[in-house]
Length: 146
Ligand code: FES
Image 1 (cartoon, protein in one colour):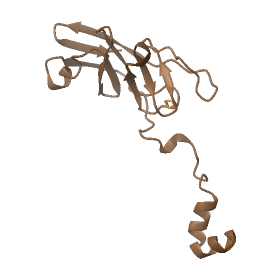
Image 2 (cartoon, protein in one colour):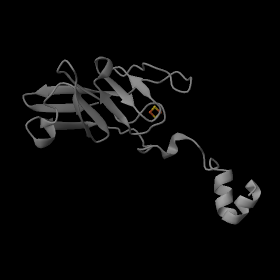
Image 3 (cartoon, protein in one colour):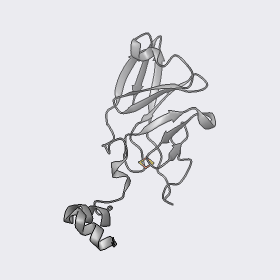
């Protein structure tokens, strides 16, 4: 069966979908995660003795809260960054223990130092820094704020 005959048997809709699979855009828009606005006015606390806070007991652990990645880095310091990637605003920034501990977005592979400095280029473009928030530890209460 020739290709055009095959497509005819499928019907117009299926033939169109097979012929133009990227018409809706072959961008990364269908990646896991959502494109979101970076949050503003970040100011919250985490009780390190709470169920949530205990997830930060070990060096190299992190939690997600209010679109912020809260990290206990490999040296035991608390660091916080936006979950919203500076590349295309997907909320997929996470902490990786690799390379001494970095922020990483798996949508297109952006990597950031713990101070938010970009560590690589994506799509050949100069990467923008990742937004970093202040952290302050008072006893067992960790404050994350702008
Ligand atoms: S949105 Fe492209 S690397 Fe994060």
